[in-house]
Image (tube, helix red, strand yellow):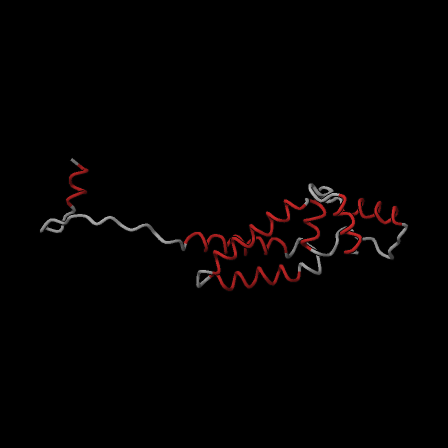
Length: 146
């Protein structure tokens, strides 16, 4: 099945075949090749191949780069490692199956949490020191109020 999918990709590399068009395109491809399969497949049973065949090479590159960017930033945080591990487990199983309604939203939720962790742990800019009066008040704050 993956071999037939790669033949379809060759013909539609830039823009893909379109979202949720795999079933009809796959049937046409099998008919043109004179091949038959015992089952009907509405996806290539591979997450990355599905993105590639339906949306094209630029979409696959952006998909991989976006996920890698989020995971790389989250991995730099102590709390991000379990989220990265969970996301990577989903991606590994995605190499042999397809997106399903029960699991896929959990992946995107985990990826969103990883993105939030990666974003919140950036280095803060250095704080400006202020002059303090003998009574402990802030001289800059007083001058700004006047």
